[in-house]
Figure 1 (cartoon, rainbow, N blue to C red):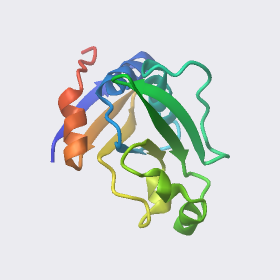
Figure 2: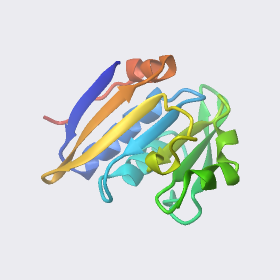
Figure 3: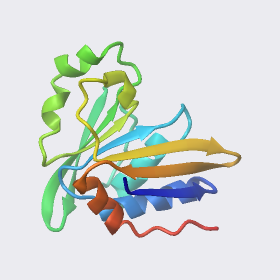
Figure 4: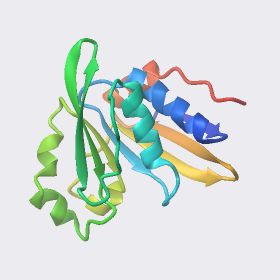
Length: 161
């Protein structure tokens, strides 16, 4: 399994990683974000979407469960769906909402709190694990598929050491 580890010293480091991930995105990618409350999952997603060209507010979908965005990748429009499953009571809610259909091989799906929808959530291409470490964050990216490996191959990120 291909992986990448780094320490992000501050919020600017999280934003820089989000921007680097935006440049590495490929259509069909499913990304699962793991970490405690306040670990930086939404901040990372916000930075990724803004760097990918989304103009405007990126809100946490804590209450709506999903927020769609449209970005351009290599001249083609791609939908990015940002899920926050923190408030889901059961995996069946994920199915009942029809969210599984969004994982169609074209959309990019970014999922916060994916453990809330196991075992019905599709397997991710990329796992991102964020942990608070002092004033910053430790992050690990794990590729779980060819698409995830392609994303990590394209990732150009050097954290401030």
